[in-house]
Image (cartoon, rainbow, N blue to C red):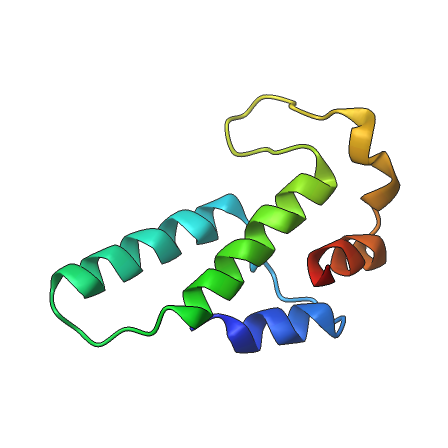
Length: 90
């Protein structure tokens, strides 16, 4: 679902790769194929996890996904782990 992982992340537990773009893409593909196959899939868990990945990406203002430095200084105040979690909470 994604909600337990995000709750752990927001409580300060370090889960590797829980808020990465690759995780988001896999979550989207998995939910899409599950719905297409007719499986009963809830929408709340994947939406919470997807929103957290997007918020974490915005708070960092950079990505390593494309192999290019896309950093910009507008969100440089949210670069620490604690401030990133606070940004995701909002």
